[in-house]
Image 1 (cartoon, rainbow over the protein chains, first blue to last red):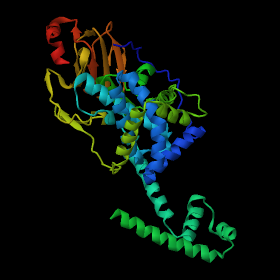
Image 2 (image 1 turned 90 degrees about the horizontal axis):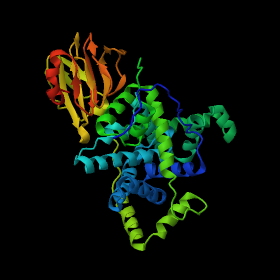
Image 3 (image 1 turned 30 degrees about the vertical axis):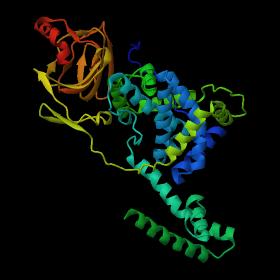
Image 4 (image 1 turned 90 degrees about the vertical axis):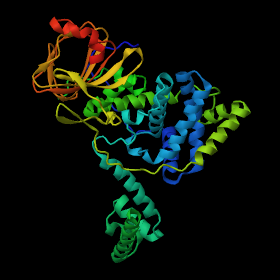
Length: 206
Length: 236
């Protein structure tokens, strides 16, 4: 069924640098983030337009039948829509994530066609919740997403202080100078903001 | 320290989703144990993804591929186009999935009086039926077309499998314990691929648990174990 070389230990490939993205990849990442964070329909429509013809082409290659190729399009894009929150931009490109979603569904479809097996094995073979030894990381990534949305909902002045200090990592003094307000004002805005964030987090974890 | 890895070719087929389930289970379980192959898989996934998304689209004369994609969509017959916009709106009517963090306990199996945790890839195989002869116990995981079979094998301590050859290939992934054969000693995570022309007689001092995939029955070559040949398919 296939020719396979013997065990090899030569590893020639290096992981690809994900920090250096093309404009197109960045655009797709942005759409993906909008879908993940806000279920943004316009962004999803853009993703749909970009991916659909390509998924269909891939499906035609694998299944040689239009009906199945379209099923692959439908199921892949549905999973992208429903599972978008699992996409972690720190771990790679959105295009790669969509590829794995498509590859997984394709595997299960082929298995179903070839052996009449209805099981879905793909998520165990290539886990979507990629935990590689640190299930905490995945949690952190969703945790920071949740935090960001809470920060977003703070009053403008408090939001600015939190972002400057925790995200841009300015010191309180730098920020006070930058805003032209007394240091005490920065401190009290920060205190207010933090107590609001705390209660928001407590509320959402009850 | 893992010394035996899947070839890049096997890793590539696995990444593309083109291996039979029995073999992909082994590659996935190996990758879970092997950070080196994890990295390679990641790089291969990027590579395959980039290749999949750069398929030449019809009418790809547009300035960028987003335009080209839209063009391809709109260039198709209007009924197809309508189908797609129906598909798009029906998808967006669905609610996004709640993200759950299940602290999934590893699947375990009990054989020869001992409990073993199985790799994540075997999560759905929690109702294994063990059977065996002598020191060897077997639980079938998957039977596929072309006589490809994947099984868990448990071998008791200080036991060996009689010398045998393989008519096809035999893949052994060592999940627990150690074993050795004419070629050396193997440890947890080793992914050992043997082609049909090979003869070997594995021996384990401390006992071991393996996942093995074969595409033909073992062929025993020595002594009374030849009696097992007609039974080989049943056994392993």
